[in-house]
Image 1 (tube, rainbow, N blue to C red):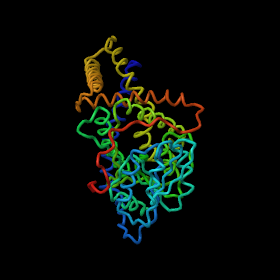
Image 2 (cartoon, helix red, strand yellow; image 1 turned 135 degrees about the vertical axis):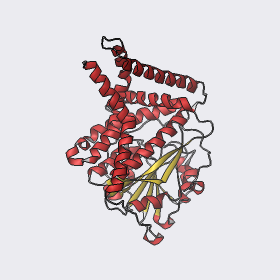
Image 3 (cartoon, rainbow, N blue to C red; image 1 turned 45 degrees about the vertical axis):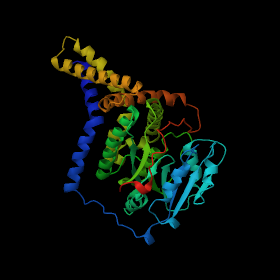
Length: 410
């Protein structure tokens, strides 16, 4: 077989495996484990008197528009108020965030004028946390009322060092390509996280809602871009697992438009690449066993090799189409790829016109997401020498959606 053909088929396999094949294989492994393996750990439902104290940690920068709604959400959570400590770290904020928080005596606020980024804020704030558990959440997300109880339940398993909540995207009737694509992506991602946790461990936690045993916190470099990912996987490196609770979720609005979504995706991709380098020991299957398989399949391939292979596949296919060994199979694959890119391009055109077409959100968002991984390499290179973790926030759709803990379905 020609060398180009070998590269083509390996590339095609890895692309399929990364985005669909791993999910199928993971589902099959979970079914086998749950049928023939050890019984699933059953968390104990704790009475109020037995619930531990915990800190709800919110790192915020210039969040004046959402402070009051977020605090109302926090106080509506179903958890004994005397055991719930609310901590805001608002370093660098220049708007009225701190003034608004003064109206809420239930919140403890740490502030310094210097802005060093979210990771530095976490490091500073965690020195003040005295409770055995800490739950991290973002200022612009709303948590369902039973979230904290459901998270704490998972810690009854001594092997669990971190609990990941579910991230959900609130999409209004005028959902754009960013909102539609982001919502679909997170539904699929949530399914994979649940299956990962059922097999052995989730492969990371999202900063919108996750919790850790406080004594497992390790300070991170201030320039860390994905603090939630690094923090949660360092806990795995210490021999613990990451549990996943679908019944503890954070809801947030979708990005205001595709340009704002691109800011998020590029930063996340850059952070993913940075994380892989900093979590290099996790690539050792002799030490981390099945978790290395999960980590490489779910995370590493998406942030490194697969996006590159995706965008060279069509040119490679074109060369093979006109080679002496050309076959009908290569023509079929070329046509399928061309149609996919055409659908994605038309989705891009409609997004620019603010025309809603959920069918075309899929190919467009898929290509958009992978293109931003390549941009992530450039973003990370340009940050070389920057010693803080600051970034430009992506704007979300209108805040006043009426989301609150009191009206979330459980």
